[in-house]
Amino acid sequence: MSFYKSNLTITVVDPHRAGHELNYYPGRTNVLLADILLINKVDSANLTDINAVRENVSKLNPSAALIEAASPISLEDEDKSKLIRGKRVLVVEDGPTLTHGEMKYGAGVIAAQKFGALEIVDPRKYAVKTIKETYDKYPGIGNLLPAMGYGEKQMKDLEATINKVPCDSVIIAAPIDLRRVIKIKKPTIRVLYELQEIGKPDLTDILTQFVNKRSK
Image: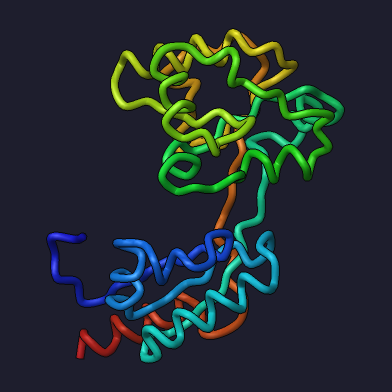
């Protein structure tokens, strides 16, 4: 939890993980602390999960302002969609999302589907050392590669694993650009996404009101 007592707390909840806002620490705590609750990814989550999250957070913290938003998927260069369409791709997702986050997919999978990948190549039998240990510890990860980079050794193992996988291209959906820290010997494309608020009031409205009130 934060070491600061904030004057305004914004908590983002994810309908792809419906129920985590009730059952996981610190998710539930952050919902209870929030002044603003932002339900994100309503463009890619199913309506049942969106409604469940909306109901859960409204019951937990009825005084918080509620905002809904989309996170449309894009590529760093739309011309590079040719590296996905009809190709056998390796999808590298955010590590914690797939491990203790228990997600079965992330932005990379959504991009692979959106831009028409032929196949998502299973990297598990090509995993080396600490990356193999990650699969052993979290067998539910499936055919995605978690971007594990906690130290130089693990980054080297991630690099070796990526370069061993027989694929046409690599979709990078980790929060950072992995090409800055490891050498990937295959064509790569990075997935991006932006916050797109839906309806009013939005964050600008609420934050403006908050700042104006405190400046008086």
